[in-house]
Structures are given as C-alpha cells and as structure tokens.
Length: 135
Image (cartoon, rainbow, N blue to C red; front, side, top):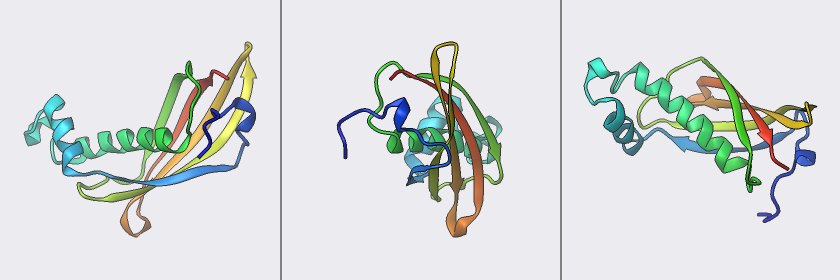
C-alpha cells in the first residue's frame, strides 16, 4: 500500500478504484439503535435501519478503498438509489469507481460511483459521492 496520498491526477474516469466487503452486523445495528431507538416503531430491525446501514457501508467502502486521502477534502454531496434493503448479518460487496472529475471555480471535483450487492449478487444500492479534492 502506498503512503503517498491519492491525488486529483490519480483519478481516471471509468476506472475501478477498488472493492471491499462490508458486513451489516449486530454491532452496527446496536450503534444505530443507540442513536435512533431499539423499538420497531423507531425503525429498528427493519427497512429504515437497513437503508441507513446501506449509507454507512457506502461511506465505509469509500474510506477503505480510496486511501490514503490528503487532508482537507470536502464531502460536497451524495446521492443514493436503493435497489434492495440489506439484512442484518448480510455481507455486501461494494465497488468504488471513478465516475468523473473536473475543475470548477478553481476547485478539484471528484465523483465516485459506489455500488453495493448483497448475498447472491442481490443489488442493494448505487451511490454517487461528490468530493472537493484537496490535492
């Protein structure tokens, strides 16, 4: 693994940056429930919690794959399209692809397509993360 940070020049639109496996496990569920509540009416153990776990694991995949990052990046926005709800205990294979990059108003913008699939290849989500890259 390189110790040099990923630079704007390193992003190649259309290129796979990497993939990883994330698991929506009981520890993640407990942490979510500690914030939002542990009862079904709070969304616990159901689709609301599952959708939140998709977002968490989308971001974890980005953080695991695009390393090391230079300090000072800004998370500008994200979009998420749900295709299925992850289930507690399910492993998710998450891929990170450089969807594009451009200079706007003297800032380096990077877009990353992050897609997750559950067990058996079941499609879970497609996300688009837009970042202002520091270097």
